[in-house]
Image 1: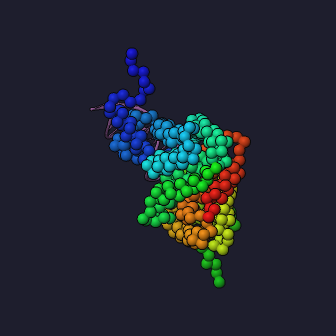
Image 2: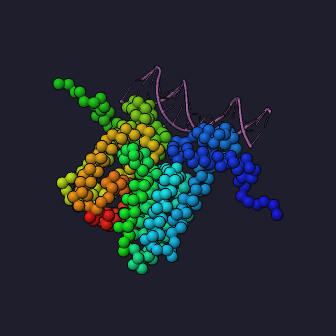
Image 3: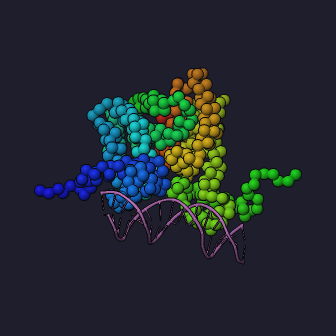
Length: 206
Length: 206
DNA sequence: GTCTATACAAAGATAGAC
DNA sequence: GTCTATCTTTGTATAGAC
């Protein structure tokens, strides 16, 4: 039986270069947005020539799309992990904590998505209306059930999820502003952790 | 005594065109970001030819800077209005409400600033480190005094302000995502108002 | 003040040799 | 697979007539 796996990487060098390109693209797209990024910048960051880069991907847009869809899974993992059988408040606090951790560890990914959505998600709207909406609908149902069982304060589950996104991603997306205002000698993410613990403790008490 | 006011608009037509350009620039820059926007788009939206547009502003960047600095005052007005002599909880709830109202009424302005800060505020960092930081420092002091007087829960004033920004601006900046997830038949801002009322009620109780 | 025409540079993408 | 060279388009900005 011959190899029928999806076209992409086969040789070691192909895999390595494809990896390097996506890493470089993440760096550049997240910092400049789609239109602000140039193939020159991405090629240089990947250590390749521009035509060589276009040997691996047919166009700038193809790189961007591959990057977004490839990151979708890892980006949604924390919400997927929300366990219907766990302790409601602990589950939500844990989700918030994992999202904050992702903002700290993966700020480029956060800004990549932020850039895209901010500009109307022209290359990503199907991802939002598809996988993301389905997952949020599912988890909102879980939260609603918890509330009906009297285990959480009666808050709108969708806006509860939005609030977690807003509060945690803010520290990645607007990092320069946060740091400029706090000044030196601060650890924004550590402080945010304490603040958000208190905020959600108070919000969620039944 | 002759007119010594800043160079800008004098004739009626100049004033009108400058206005039209800045309005068009807000429309385009907020939707596309600085690099994504083109002078063609701005000129067309303003009903002018491209060279004519450059008669009023020396460069694309000059338009952007003028736009940002011109909007700074109105953008910071709600925080400026926070009254040290008012009722602490009511003042903060009122600030949150005014910010949410601005997200609803002025989403383009919100996205304009978001685009800029997200990409490291290359054309705006002095505004953040200057006026904005000074204002936040001042109001954080007010909040700290309220807390020390036992009138509010002991929360970090800076992160309290950040949380208001994050939660309210989210509905303007990520509008497409919010609407895609909620689906039709929702009023995101009205729902957010209820949710955030509850959230800050619970957070701020001493 | 406004226009047409155009200079000039940047950027996406392709051709074809190696 | 990778490179040099190049095509083409787009976009910022200017010149100069009206």
